[in-house]
Length: 308
Length: 231
Image 1 (tube, each protein chain N blue to C red):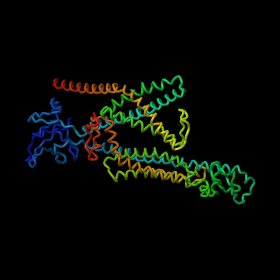
Image 2 (spheres, each protein chain N blue to C red):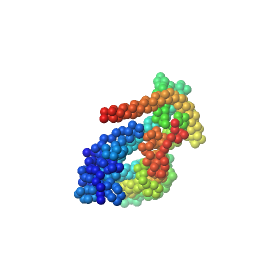
Image 3 (cartoon, each protein chain N blue to C red):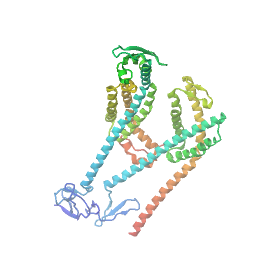
Image 4 (spheres, rainbow over the protein chains, first blue to last red):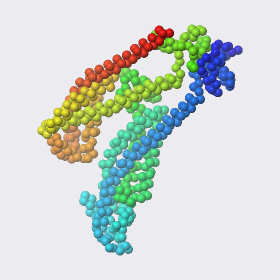
């Protein structure tokens, strides 16, 4: 037999139907001697030792907040990939600069050679040797009737592989100093990895690396568009022609390279964050961020010999 | 209406019972009017979560401010030492202008004490000697990257401005780095000596912050005691 012990005077919502149980009898049930309240609407038993239900709107607001967090995380994911792509694209463009100037010079020399003035349109291509100062001699094919037309028409008639080889190949025509940009790229990728490692605190090991792969995937996806443009219409300018030859390799190489510091950042990120918090914050504030230690099974920081 | 809070001894709802701050433990105690059992007024998880969020927010704010100050202090230290070294070189080469005194005054009398004050106040929770040694190592690393890397990237080592001639070979690059360390460490040690002036400034700031915190806690205790007496 349930024993009536008091009356509920505070607010408490039924966790099943949301009915406010204020005014209901607090009962001690006979089996466990536990204090309970029965909902008069749906007969659900509420154990009054638990915290009262917040109500349906609390869960709804929690879902809205979770959705906003998800949108922010997806935005940061795309932004991270875009950042890596942006720096890699810069490397890819600059590496093609030297070859662009070679092609540009060849085109100008071809226009100034004057051999095609008045030539018939049906004349065969005329091999012409161009000597640019500081470069090996390069043989181009001057096609009658094409001068005065766009660069594209002239470039389409050239033996691109031969020009590339004659210009000195990969070792000479590539602006290798652009690879210094890999230093800030590595730093940016490492910091991104650290940030993601802290944001994805519940993840470890392989799943963290998979998150990094997701960032690289976004970078590669965005990189698909300029590469498509380079391959589809590589002849509309000397820049496009040079990039079509050189830039795809360095764009892919830069994105792949960025994966290494990104992975290191993901693996070491929480350690770096813990070190930064320990270094910058006094002990009484470190406790608020103790989650950084506890998530990896470590004890939160305490005063050590280094500290005063 | 208050959230229901059941006395676990007798089942009485304590929602309408006003809690009192227990003076010994500082806990918010509710006495059951029926069985006189003591219960601690429970904080709802939502409110507990909100307070935790505010604590984390405060800690993160301080962390971000510290990082910004550390970046500013790093940049200020590197620029000040480079300025000192360059100004000294100009004086030695007899190329100094009339405003050369500022290139000594600002780094040594303004920047150095501020950096010293931040090292004392901002990183005062670590041992001072360790902090200062780490600061010397950190700024040397930053200067090595910032000052030497343009020469390495461009492949040119032009020190004509301070009379060391122009060179572009790897052997001279090594000599340039050695010169950098000699000049940098000299300038940095002078800078850090001047930064020692900032130690009392930093300690004064820490003392004022601790005093403000203590005053705040005393005021809160006074308010709570007044509320208890009024009841």
